[in-house]
Amino acid sequence: MPSGFFDHEQTPALLVLEDGRSFRGVSFGATGEAFGEAVFSTGMSGYQETLTDPSYHRQVVVATAPHIGNTGWNDEDDESSRIWVAGYVVRDLSRVRSNWRSNRSLDEELRNQGVVGIAEIDTRALTRHLRERGAMRVGISTVELDPAKLLDKVLQTPSMAGSDLVADVTLAEPEVVPAVGNKQLTVAAIDLGIKDMTPTRMAERGIEVHVLPASVSLDELRELAPDGVFFSNGPGDPATADAPMELLQGVLDQGIPYFGICFGNQIFGRALGFGTYKLKYGHRGINQPVKDLRTGKVEITAQNHGFAVDAPLDRAQLTPWGHARVSHVCLNDDVVEGLELTDDDGNLLAFSVQYHPEAAAGPHDSAYLFDRFVDVMQRRKRSTTDAQEN
Image 1 (cartoon, rainbow, N blue to C red):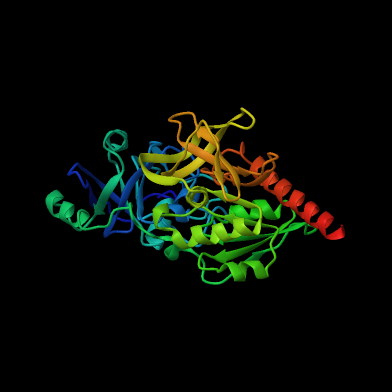
Image 2 (cartoon, rainbow, N blue to C red; image 1 turned 60 degrees about the vertical axis):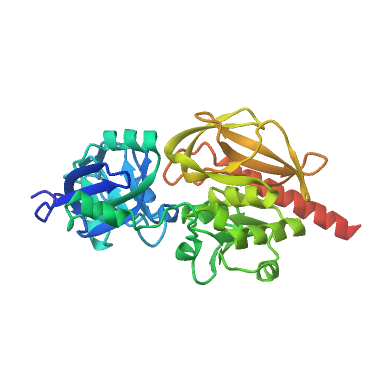
């Protein structure tokens, strides 16, 4: 039997949505039951990075690409220490893995980590249903094949709205990612569910990155004397993230440059006085078009979010720290995709985007954002030095 074929007898599996819609398929990965929020991702590649992204904690991901698993699984592309999705749904699971970097099959890795998957269902119909009805709770089971009984279990699970999940994914102790080459700057990166490639992208630019638990205090952060502060992506409802929001407001009080992505964008929005809300079905994939209102340039971006910032697209808002405005918008639906804070002279003080510029997996259109962060930090560093000398 070629490497990558199912090496166990196929087992029936059942998927049931909270509105009662059900799909029957076959099990892959672990057997048992999985519950979470059903969401779909439109990426045609990069499933390993998706499955190991902590932002997907407690979500059951539906792959819209019909053929998944052909590149297998390797030991190099994980974005964290484990798979975070609650379950995985695919149409056609590849029976062979053919990539030269592959060490094992997707099926094998999901079994190793106890993640339940279901294959051979109509994922196009399921995706259309989620687009029309919205993301919703779901259950996958290989042990309960009665739709009514599985639905009862689904309805007992918590909703994503109101869920505070940061503590589940943040690291326990600080870690340091050294700068590549000569150290130019120091950044304190708050881990709300950070992907490994993010500090790597900063380290490539001469930044020593101190990855800190989400529970870090402002005093502990100030002891590092960072040139900038970064808030990462992460799971859950941003309306529950009061402690990170208060920490960020303290950072802004100190005048420290700030850069946030995804969950960090939503927390930045709250810190500036904007609200957040849950999207109908969110943006997930590596092909989302975003316009940079500062440059007029359109980027194809990697995204994974079910919540968004509620801010006006046509005007700035005065805050205690400067002028806040929307900097990026999604061309599909005008959802806020970025925010920026400037002083009276128009100098950039802090900014954030709703998407993932680290490009793991995804396009590289947004790599310039790390360079923009470097520019903001270096400008503040020069101005501080000039002030001290004078």
